Image (cartoon, rainbow, N blue to C red; front, side):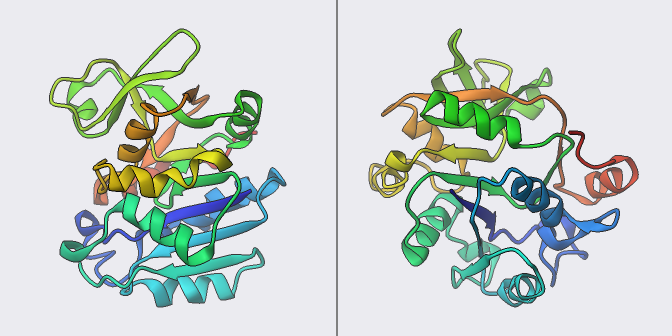
Amino acid sequence: MKCLILAAGYATRLYPLTENFPKPLLKVREKTILDWLLEDIDATGLVDEYVVVTNHKFAPHFSAWAHAHTLPIAVVDDGTLTDATRLGAVRDIQFAIEQQGLTGDLLVIAGDNLLDFSLAGFLRFQREKGASCVMRYSEPDVNRLRKTGVAEIDDEGRILRMEEKPAEPRSHWCIPPFYLYRAEDVPLVKKGIDSGCGVDAPGSFIAWLATQTPVYTYEMPGRRYDIGNLASYQAAQETYQGICR
């Protein structure tokens, strides 16, 4: 299994910290955000290569980080230089697939989120289902639901319908940017783009994919820290205690 890390954003809401430095490499406690994620994933023994897709502005930072790392990490530069010219997460996924020739099951994660639980349970869940899977959590705040991917699911956790940033959310199930595509569905990323699925938010492909093939949801057993602005970064620094196993 390969792991694709989405890190091509410009994190403008975290300026000045991220004006010239990538958000996933900011430190929380003694580790970078990205190292918290990768060390947990590596402990599962199921991933043999990591691919970071980033922009041209931040590619040197990630290359230096990867060079100093012990894990097998490839850095893919999507060539963009500004927030206004970014490809969008779904196009970045396809760009990395093409550049690295990615096949087989593919774990796709945002590189700027922290979790206080291990992803091992999610990976086991996907192997049991034998289908593409995503994580979910219940969000009671309607205003927050309007800013994320929201899914309707059946009694078995299969996505019936999903929408990114809905004006009128149809459920309280949020879908954070942690996805596991089964091997057969990896080639469908290009088909989804060609079919007109949204490309800015990574969940837009999942919303389309769920209309083509079963996609199941795994309820998160812990908390996700979405570091989107200076206040949330400060809160994570003060409260994050690492991964509970």
